[in-house]
Length: 243
Image (cartoon, rainbow, N blue to C red; front, side):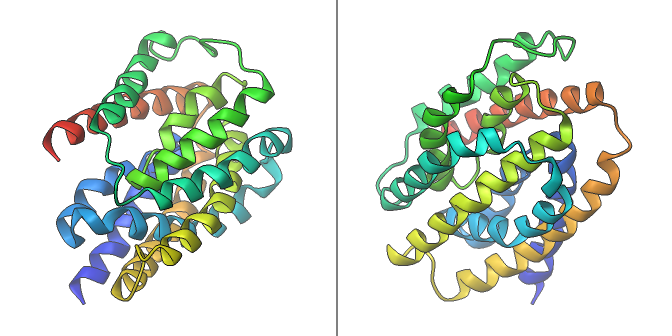
């Protein structure tokens, strides 16, 4: 039973922090889950846990969703999630992880250590190609939440809007991810129980994080988000070289 206890605990701690930093909880969990359940099982279990935990965050942030972004991002994200599950067993690009990692690390310079609100102009239609690419990579790797943050921050979203919009899009894409994992045989048996335990912890973390989020300013939130994007980028680069 110890593995279920630690999955709940790890999910709660990682996603309390994830709420304050607009993502990255899944990246924190990657090395932990790889050690506990084996690297090959991480993407389906992590995405299942995320999917189970997201309704809590969705209810908490529902009124802050920016629907104009959802209509652009969501349709393409469903296609990207399906393609990612289809290629899960054969697509492992370490070069891609390094490129993404370097982009995330660069955000600290793009935003001048959090002093700038925007580093480039974002238009709504830009979220169409992003909707295809980001869920695809997330489905293959199991975690890539922070990659969307620079684009949402540059759309001048407030902290609650950013989290709410990301959560709705991720939840909808999660339906395709979990269905595709099951269909292609990547999610089965005990992996369902591990994902359920992780999802309970993630739900607890989302609730706790929402309480703490109200206590920080927009500037602090942006600085936390940028700092975690940099950390996430470093983790991706290290993982690419040592996995």
